[in-house]
Amino acid sequence: MVGQEHITKTLKNQIMAERVGHAYLFNGGRGTGKTSAAKILARAVNCLNPVNGEPCNECEICKAALSGSLTDIVEMDAASNNSVEDIRSIREEVNFLPTIAKYRVYIIDEVHMLSTGAFNALLKTLEEPPKHVKFILATTEPQKLPATILSRCQRFDFKKISNDDVIKRLEYVAKESNIEITKDALKLIAVLSEGAMRDALSILERCLQDGETNIDENKIKDLVGIPKLTYIHSIVKAFLEYNVEEAISSVEVVLNEGKDLNNLLWEIIKYVKDILVYKATGKLDIYNENEIEQIKKLSEEVTKQRLLYIICDLSKLENDMKWSSQKSILFQVEIIKLCSENLVETVVESVDNNNKKQDKTVNNTKKEEQISKKDKENQVENKTNIANAISGYGEAKGWKNVLAELRQNGKIMLYSNLLKAKAIELNDMTIGISFPSGINAFGKSILEKPESITELSKVISIEYGKDMRVKIIESVDSLPKKQEDSTNIIEKTANELDIPINIID
Image (cartoon, rainbow, N blue to C red; front, side, top):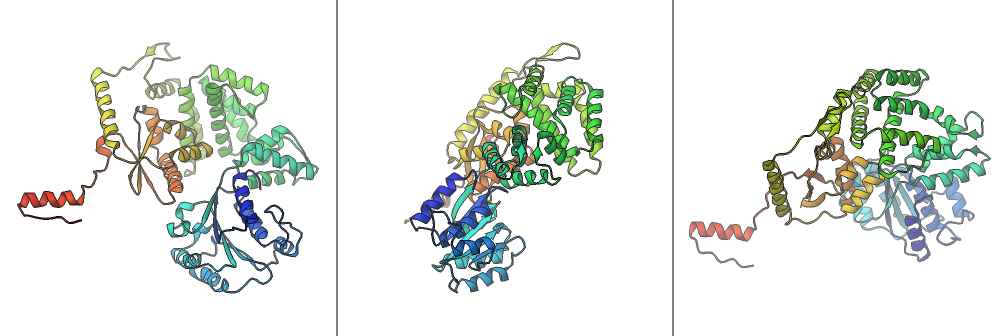
């Protein structure tokens, strides 16, 4: 297991203390080790000679489990075996003792794919499990599991594996396999894997299919269709200089080499994001000195607002291209749009936080849009009214965990615009998001995007263990009316009708 020490340590302690639970839920993104951990745990609880909570992999039980011949460890993919009959067959089997192992272990992968009837059938077994049976459920979407199932499992959340951990593991694999791989290549694989160790190993394996054991950064880029950084730099530089001819020319060179258009767009967005990060922090990890110097020069020639605008616009293009049969036309139109100085500067200026003066290259003039005194007073009054109205609601639980998960998932724009937000529980199905200190037009446009609301709802639902909705609170009118206490309603009605009534608790 790589990068999941918070989980492996707990499981080892349970095994050594002989306090293994009867049902586990392993939740996490793809390739983070859920199924591998389930298989290791299944061997560990049955191992004849466990070592510090780990299977020895040498006894007859471990060898049979590794070879797949041990019938007491059953693996089932719920994506293709999700019917009531599939679970009923398990219910019938659990009544029988294991053949040679101590426990009969059932590993159900993608458990969220089970039907409602199958969940009900599984619940019956989880409620009254035989002592010789263990269940390990794995899923990427725990919010789709019924609360009755979740409450009967010990839940472990697998996090995305850090780039450093991915690189360390790849270095070990390369050394054991006599593979020569550069540090830049290792970093690139780690970035491409997006926290999934399985994807990282898959990319490494694909690099060896031509029989060559020497791997560098260019080989990986050619393999997955990623353009070279020099081309990406030229395209972004053309955007920032409003040079449409250079931008289109650089794109044509990349596409003529057979590179994938979606990969090209992804690389451009990532490069612009890195320029923004460098402008904000002054440091980057995955570039060499020469590349960082190029990024530094670009960062000095552009505002943060312009970079944010490019990222948002290209991200929207990425989504639009998924549903279009004319991807190249959409892409070329976007290039022309980003290189149109008048249009870009107007949009950037309109979403500026304080509507400060912006330098415009076209006419070298400055504009400043001021908010009237009355508007300011209305804004202050609205903030005060919202603050008073939400004071009666409870704070949303795990809000820090939600923000941390958004940051971990790479949703930096959404994360940064929610840092000063306040989350409250409007009811048992809805979380309200308010901004006591206000929010600018650009931040509001980010939060109101359907994909932003969907991502935020998803993360909050995972934190709460059930489906939750999100509501942006802009005014007191957007808050739901609280239900009046039933006793007060009765007393009020009695008084209006002049009917004597005595309420007994």
